[in-house]
Image (tube, rainbow, N blue to C red; front, side, top):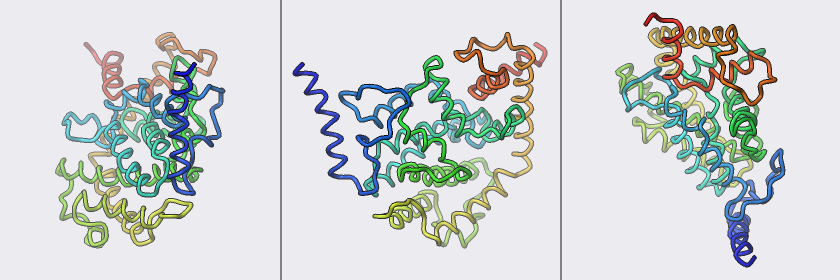
Length: 334
């Protein structure tokens, strides 16, 4: 009994440290809105630390290492994949959270889980599977479905409300996250994505550093590290002792100009469109096959759900390699 009390004191001490050291605006683990299913508090870890660990140990998280970030089926190990993107987002978000004295454990849990439901082949996969859903397929919604319904044999991870809110609302197309920690991840996701996709475009020879518009480099900086440092520093300076996390108008406008530049010259280039079309064809062919042959689907924990929902869950969980290998097996001659 004495040992149990001593272990309980470890978590309680961490919660006390949060109350004493974090910003007025920070989300305290001891004040979480809780989980859908009641659980006894962990003896060593706060609620957000538990969530981070649960996400890290999922099969869905491990599959991110073989899912496209921007360059589809890139064999060169120097290009980012969905897992390395996730780690870069977590690093940027952690730096911002630490500087703002926000809850780093909550930030890390959201960052590690934000893309856990992403499709193969990046956003082309979302486009492909939208043909089989009533509303456009959103990876953030699928990420929440993964942690609520699909992991642990259909029981889900039973994460806290704050982590699920941050995962759901991390894209800019979604409502603002309810916590400043969720807002940090939202900013970090944009900062990391934009800069590492540009860096990968340089590596691929699609662009050269001199191609970046001068009105962007004049504000954000001429190098990869300088641009990230400028944007991160601006978020911190603008958000310090404020209830919301945001960039200044000057840096935000430069960031939007850089985003437009990357869209035109990287995401929407003709070669990318051809890759996207092939990826869409691959995933839609797989989805149609499993809709017509439901017996080929693996046994599902939620077998009572509609067939199209189970097909979308199965295909979206595939890695790029899984999808390509399955397509070859099903549709190409031996």
